[in-house]
Image 1 (cartoon, rainbow, N blue to C red):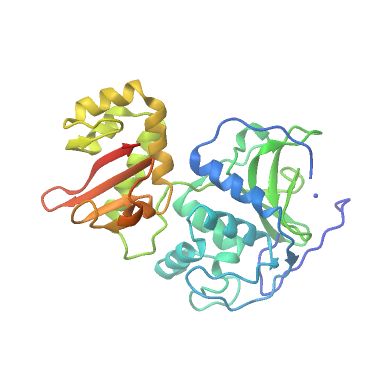
Image 2 (cartoon, rainbow, N blue to C red):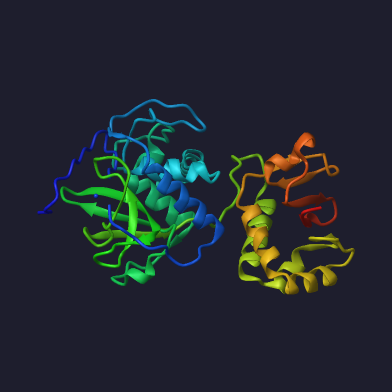
Length: 325
C-alpha cells in the first residue's frame, strides 16, 4: 500500500488520476516546450477533484474550471498549445469505434466523456502519436511525454513529464492530479507504468473538414524537416519560386543555401507550424497561413509566418516562410 494518502474517485468509469525542488531539463522541441509550460501553468489553479459525468459543449467543452480529474490536466494543457483533444478523440472514435475500449457499456461516441477517459487517450495517442517503450531508465522520459499508470484498485492515471527533476531521486517530475489538484510530483516510478506516449505529430488544430489530408501531411512533413534541419527534404516541398527569410529568393536552391547558413531561423519554422493556422485570401487565393492571426489583414505583420498554396496542377505546395519583413 502506498504511504501517502490518496484521494481516488472513479465515477462513470472516468480514469483518474505531491512537489520537489528541480533543475531545468535539456532543450525541448517548441511543441514540447509549449506543453510543459502549459502543464506547469495548471499547477497554479485550485482544482477540486471531481469525476462525475458532466454534459459539456462541443468543440472546446470543459467541466467547471475549479473541478477536474487527471485527464483534464492533459486536455487543458493541450488546449493551451492549440490542440483540442475533445475534437480529435471524438472524431477518431466516431470513425474507429471498434478500436477503442468498450468498458462503459457505450453504443457510440460521447463528446462529453470520451476524451476524459484514460484508456481512450491511450488508444488515441498510440494511433496518432508515438507509443514508446516502457523503460526503467528515467532518461527515456522526455519533457512533454505522457505517462499512464495503474493505481491501486485498478484505477488508470495519466500525467505530463516536465523539464524539472526531483532533488531526491533525479527522476523527471510529472504534472498530474491524483486527488489534490494539479501538482508537479516525483510520481514517475511510484506505480506500475502502463503506457509511454509522445503526441506532437500533427501541428494542426483545425477540426475535420477544414483541411484535407494532403495539406495536413504536407504541414507535418515540413515541420519535421525543419526540426531535423533536413534541407534536402525541405527543398522537395518548396515551390520553385520560394520566398524565404530576410530578403527572399526566386529559387529553391538559393533558399536552401541561405537556411544552411541560418539554421536558427529555420528552427523557427517548426514553432510557427505548431500554432493554429487558417485559410485566407490576404496573400492571394487559396492560401493557408500560420499562425492564424497572420491571416487577419489588420494584423498581417508577424516576425515569423509561413504560407501554403493550393495549385490546380501540383496540389498543395509550400510557398514561403518569412521572418521580419
